Length: 341
Image (tube, rainbow, N blue to C red; front, top):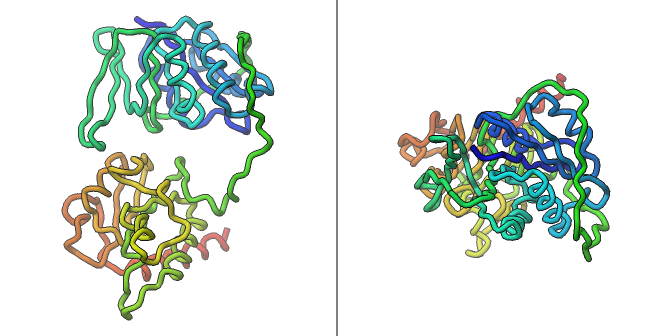
C-alpha cells in the first residue's frame, strides 16, 4: 500500500477549511499510515486542532513567506513537503491555492496529477478515484501505477473530520528555492453582505432567466428582482447560482441583474455545487441547468409553469407560484425572525 501524504494549507485566519478536513477524513477512510503536511504563516494552531487525526507524522512549512498565496512559494512548499514525506499518494483539497500550484509540483516530482476528483477508495490494495467527464454525464473510476500520484479532491468528497484537539510536535521542513519576485501588498475582498458565492452555505439559491422577463403587468421588473434576490441572500446567508441563459442575457442586449457573473453559473458549462439544499426560481429545469444540481441532496423549485422540467422528476418539490410573490413573503418572514432574535 502507498504511503499517503495529506497536503493542507491554512486559510488567512490560520485555520483549516472544511474542504481540508474532508480530505483528512477521506485519508482516514483509506486505512493504513498517512502523513499530514501543513503550509501557512503559523500552522501550530491548525496542527493542534487535528491532533487526534491519526497521522503518524505532521510536517510543516511555515513563516511569513508562506502566509500569502503565490505560485512560487506554494509550489516550493508543496514540493518540499512531498519529498520529505516520501509519499506515493498525495491527497489535497481543491482550493484555489493548491489547484494553481500542484500541477507544477507534479511535474517537478516527475509524477502525475488528477484534479476535480469526487471520491477515492481502496480496491485490491490500490487507490481508485472517481471523476466526472463529458459535462458531468459520465463518471469514471481511475487508477494509476505511476508515482507519486497527486489527487486533488473536490468539496463534498467525505464528511469533514471531527476529533479531539491537543498539542502536537511539528517536524519543520526546509524549503529551497522559495525566492519570489512577487510581493503581496494587500487583499481586496467584498464585504460579507456583498458576497454571493458561498461554497459552505447550507442552501444554494438559483435564479433563472424568468426574473428579467415581462411579468403579469406586461413589464419587466429587474430592479425589484434584484432587491428580492439580494434581500434573500442577506437574510439567509445562501449562495447564489444562475442558469447560463440569465448570465448571457447581457450579450443579447437585454436587462440583466448586475451582481450576476459567469462565476455564479451552475450547470454543464458552469459549476457543480454540493450544498445540502437547493432552491431554483424562475428556472425551467432544463438539462443544461439540472446537470449541475446532481449533488444537491434536497432540490426544490418555484415556477408558474406546472409542466416545467422541474416537475418531471428533476426536483423533489415544485411550488407552482409566482417567484416574485413567494420571495417577497419569504423575505418578510426572515426579517421578522431576525428582528425577534
